[in-house]
Length: 531
Image 1 (cartoon, rainbow, N blue to C red):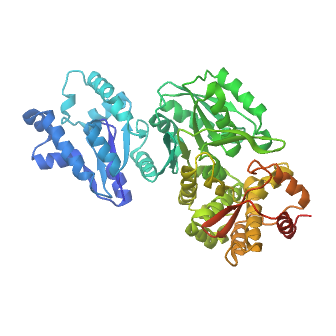
Image 2 (image 1 turned 90 degrees about the horizontal axis):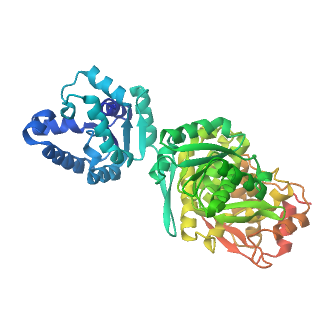
């Protein structure tokens, strides 16, 4: 396992926090300053006085190089150890680096309260002025570290708990033509939205439009805006109605007006805080406002976490079909905080699980098998290993979208269950949730594959079984079969007059097909309950 490195200015609590983290994790603790003193055989003030600061920094560099090759350590660095770029890069490659910060007055209080005379850099007549000057010199180096915790008003235990949360963050890179962006997955990450944006090169003082809806904003809007302000950004709230019926050009137009009223310009950023509808609308608005502004995703539903927030696709609906108008808009980053799932109703959890199961069918047999085993836990969100499931589901999608970033080929496999699913959504007036519709669509696709002899035996039953075990629908609403076929004919995934189907051969293996006889489709729809 990788190291946990705690750094920052003097008096921010590096050593005490590091010791607490090490005890809680059961790992060895290394205090770099204490290690250097032991090796030199004298305290740091004497090293500075007798050998000079340059000698001390050389010792720091040697120790950084040594520690970066080890694992499962908790390391507290000296305040200046990671100012050197080589040291900083080595430590970042060895594990998670967290920078502690603190108010100047509190730093002075802590240093004076400790009665510690062994701080050679503060051996001056005006310690406060020296602290302010040193902080300014070190500002950019400290800001280059992604994870930041202000310890001014927090206890050692609170800071240590946050360090451990950050150490457990999963980072998944996504590459696309011309760039890449990170997905961060971890509990408590809403508090670090500002830090992650700054790490994504958003300049201090920039305006940030936080697009949310009346359901999500009261729950998380203030927390996200506070996180943005604490990182030196200027957020303002934008609101759109909740729900698929509002995924329209009219809603996008209202956002343009709110962007202008909030002072957003071409250097600004749009943050989507909500589910897939919010992400689609906010992303399309970001792609088109002033010919494109920076965009970031903070999904708050399981469905958005594993699907809509990744891959760069945005879209809005028309009466003739879903997502008929849209744009590719790659986010600057995606921040996934699984703790927000505690406020989701069970039906939304299940809807998101349909996409997780879908990704298992497409490319991760082990994930599918785990969900198959755990199906009896449905309705008990506490049983989910959410961070791991989300990450594994996303790895399937990332592999596909990196291979086909503009949906010219293999990316179509992600539409497993969508051909029938989108038609059912539209016919239900979007009363049927996306995941629920996709669940029925996956069963239909699996049965079609079985009927045509294109799948291994019993595959449709396995897929239907795991979906049903997690409380997802596997029967079609009593819509007219011809109406379903007509709705599918307006799907944007058709080619000419042919519909593209994604059919599963086996768990982890699917194919794209365009030669499915309509009478077979109709027969399967009848078997699922269509009229």
